[in-house]
Length: 229
Image: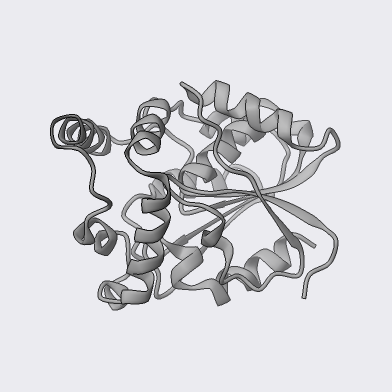
């Protein structure tokens, strides 16, 4: 059961509204698709144009988490509370940028036939790596976008600014949540943020890798319901 309170939700790379389907929230999830723009600033400006003018509740997963942090950094007065799921608001590590370049080269040479099973498994907790239901949801979301969307998202979002200083200096309450086996989150950065001011907090979800909304929706729902009240 949900109230009429809206929480705007930004998904991750090659994810759609199915990302939130397993959540049991006491609020209305308002999914926002990631705009097709050439850089982070333009994407954020497009999102700002889509949301109400009054301050909102905002959450984002993975890439959506970074975009939500960037939006909050640029327009702090527009956000009442922010929840960042499975993301640390900083520049991508060099190894991930290198992986993205390699993937783009492969797609350019050979095309794109969908996300590999090995990639899906790498984003899941050890206990979930062979979970075919999770594999199917992730694969289905990926297939619904295709190569053009993947290329656009990778090119537009690989160059990211470190937002730690800005987020430290604003007053918006922020909640970072990630899985215990999420190798894409920089826990040192999250520790630095949580120590910077009391209105930034962090939780770690057990039995979850990177795909927290799908792997442990019960825990995430409980935390979101408490946060957005």
